[in-house]
Amino acid sequence: MDNKSRQFFNMIGFIGGVWLIFEGYQNYRAGVEFFGIHTGGIGLMTLGTLFCLLNVYLFYRNR
Image (cartoon, rainbow, N blue to C red; front, side, top):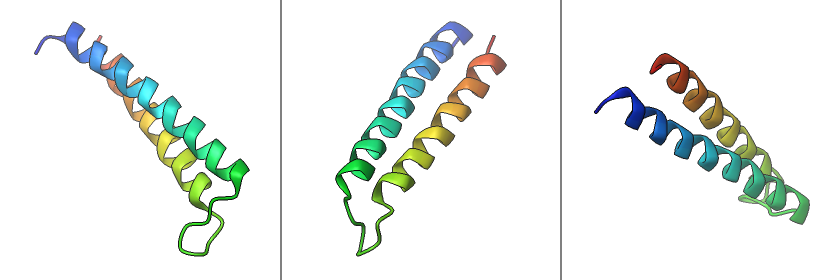
């Protein structure tokens, strides 16, 4: 796979990370409980942020 197609998948991954952050924020606002703990949205937002940062790093590494 060449670098252009890798960058394309990194952009898709970045959009997926933004979507995870958005979903986590919605769950946080709605007060969704995860096994009785009010952290369902915070965990998703953290995961989405890490996913975004990983894809940005890989995007610039594949230039």
